[in-house]
Length: 164
Image (cartoon, rainbow, N blue to C red; front, side, top):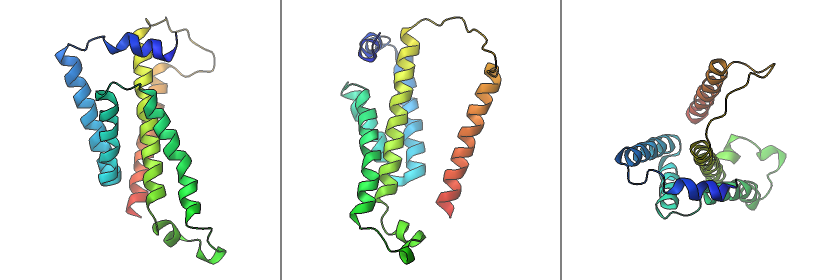
């Protein structure tokens, strides 16, 4: 089953349900709050673009395309200012323009949002298979704890960099 078939199959599923809509609005509010907290007005703009793509019923992969395009533009924007001399490479060079930072943030946020939406659509469209224990793989609770730990450390790193 291709991604577009999964999208088409899950687009109409639960569209009339109030709980589905309220959950979607709640998830968007969490996304908007997190993006705004991390990158200010640019983060809010990122969340608005996500809402526009979803409300216009555009293919969700457009979020992934936007994300990759924004990430690809980061080195272009950095190099547009010209390569600095060795003596000029410092935090002041990075602080001279925040465009690369904002593009990187938008790219990561859009790509992650697309990945979550795509994964959710695939999980809803396909019935769960029985989980087979794989040798060398941690049990599910341990894997979930590791993902939560890595996510918490990533947020802590973003906050620490933001305060520096």
